[in-house]
Image (tube, rainbow, N blue to C red; front, side):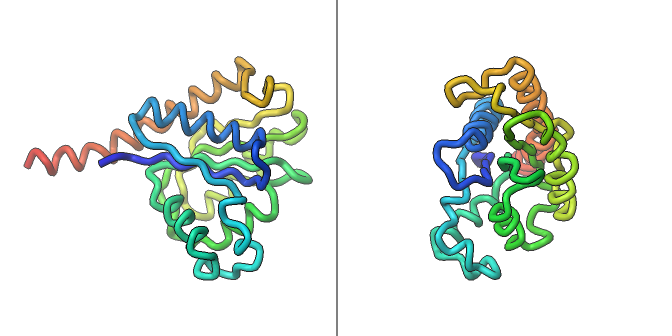
Length: 187
């Protein structure tokens, strides 16, 4: 069974630094754990997202994308910082998710912003949000400022070091998910 690591970028723009950071984390994790990786951003849920009051109100392609996100073995989520927090449309998408749908799911938290003053968005905004869903947010969050990118790609040695640590923290979740399947196959 192929495992999946899904990235969710809380940004409408393509390209964006947030999407690129999420994509880099997903690619690194997918390679390390022999998994498949897919990236979604808010544009994948438009145009029905803004008017949706529940997940069933999303158009069929947006509902299908949300189902892929919810079925993932692990998530990498990120948002650009807007006025000290994640974007409103990102939060609206998260509001459509059933409160139990992310329970025990490992999540790497990421965010991007113009400078260091927004670095605590992960601890003060994203971690409590996913804590509500009882998701397993990994200890190492990834915040990247403009200076951490070169030509739109993450290049800062400190950021890339943290990225490696965050991806490494997925190992126990992937090992645990594989072991019961192996045990059952051997029975």
